[in-house]
Length: 452
Image (cartoon, rainbow, N blue to C red):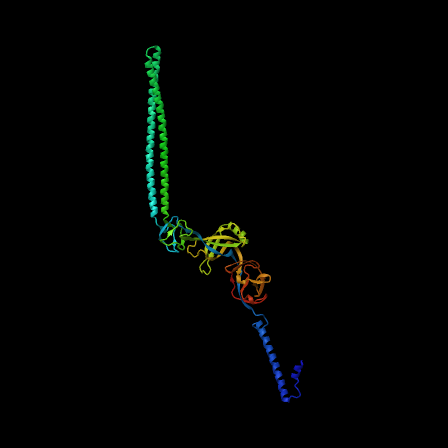
């Protein structure tokens, strides 16, 4: 006992009897109060252990779920960017004044819709000139054909003349030979014999001249034929000029090359447009169908190729804050190489986008389904806890106590986690209230439910 307590229990002799009695009574009252509080604390602790006060631990209220089997999809979740299926820069192929714009900015158009009208009058005049040149070339062909026919007739005439003069030359030669024989017999004079020889010689010269005329006529035919071919080539060129003029005229009306949504108009009506300018008149983005581009880590590439070999892979895309169902598409592109700077590989999925929910440039949440795992054991994701030895769950025993059991987790999807090892179908696990538990604690559970 301390000196201070001794002094308190042994009042000074200088105190009066009344004060000594009062001090002793106060001490006894304090001691009684301390003993009473200790008893109340012990009772409270005893009642906290058991509602009946019998010394048993009080059961902790929890919510339980039953481990069940379920077919679970194997998913890859990431983010992606929406891209137009095609983007077309509409440009003018001719120079001219823009006479009319037939759309509003941002309007949806169909393939073949008229977008722009450029002044076509100079092109119409060029087409008329080309047609006139073609008609002239056709007339020249007819003239060349007539000249060829005439040259061929002259050849025939020259050949006939040759035939006639050859016959006459032969006759003259026969006469000359006969009179030469008569001269030798003395039946005619030298003068007559020489006259027939001269005639035969002249006739032979005529044949030679006729044969030269046939050669000239044949040359004239070749010349006429070459002229005909030249005029025919001119007609072909004139036809090409007409076609070109028609094509140039068609460029005056600019139609939508595909369906899609129009962007900003860059040239207003009344301005002079240039041919193949660097700035397009307007841009068309095709958004039905549409692409979503995203990337996955290279460590998942082997699984991707393996499951892709079994068939097309389904992809879901959903804009953030969108309360509707995810858009459904399919994987259509896997890049040929891994990006060395990020360690990822680029993929593309195609979506029908009939409702127009996906817009180019938009960020979306992407879910790529590789395959489905049948008969997987699943529990609600909140049942999983993390300890020093990894993931574990509290399993409810038949005596309503809990056991902390280590498990191997698989993928989590729709608030369900696949358990690869550690649980059996039918095991009851704690999904709410487990933060108040320790191994061996007694629990009081509501109606257990199967993992949905």
